[in-house]
Length: 315
Image (cartoon, rainbow, N blue to C red; front, top):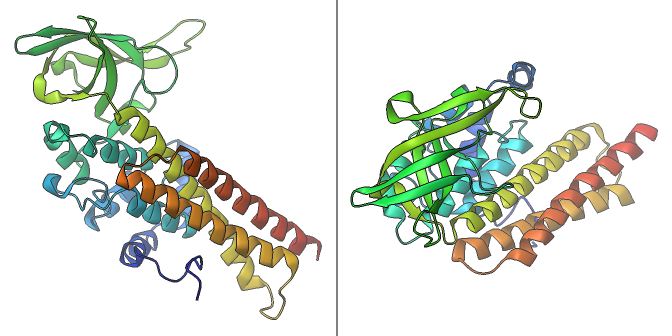
């Protein structure tokens, strides 16, 4: 029995079974309605929390399971295989994993506990693209933050913003967690112009930031981006397996052609490269090359299943 077999030697089988118990309550009609309305899957998120699946990448000291990004990938893959969509939620895993990797992450303990319990949703604001649009002036109590950045979700979808700010004293950059709310001096505003066309921005004006709400930027952004890449790979792999499983139910079991063998091979290969990359990232090792291989593997698995479905439709 080969370790590349997606149905055997799975260290996260219990997590997959727990994920399946959640997904059985969310049929395709639920996701179709969400996409039609552009809504956030709050009910799905609550179910994940009830089954202790939202905190798997959160440290045990913060109320989570502390299982790392490999476990999170297993949950995302299984959910997609069963027809659910983690596309709006996987960022929570990536951010919690990246924050937990830092020596000073315990400063973030209250926020991580809230995310693990499902009470808060953390949004990554200005990590990707654009410059650092916030300045942080150091004070004896902590610091004051000013600036604005585009808000990547609809207003009601997240209540915590994690963003990069440039220190006013020139000593690098910091990560700041802001709780969105007018009482905190942090607001979400739609800005209308020819270029923005009503885009929502997070705006902070001279907001007091406590030292406990700061985290060193070093490594967090890189690990968050790496984790998100692997979670996207897991979603694609789950989608490929869902289509393969659906096709297998319709296909005679005695027919094993080249397209079927190739699809099965690509799915197993994608699972292997994903596990390898996630294992390296969980250990803190360099895994840039392995992440690229995982991305290519998940894309190949999708193409192989598409080729198989094409053959079946013409068969």
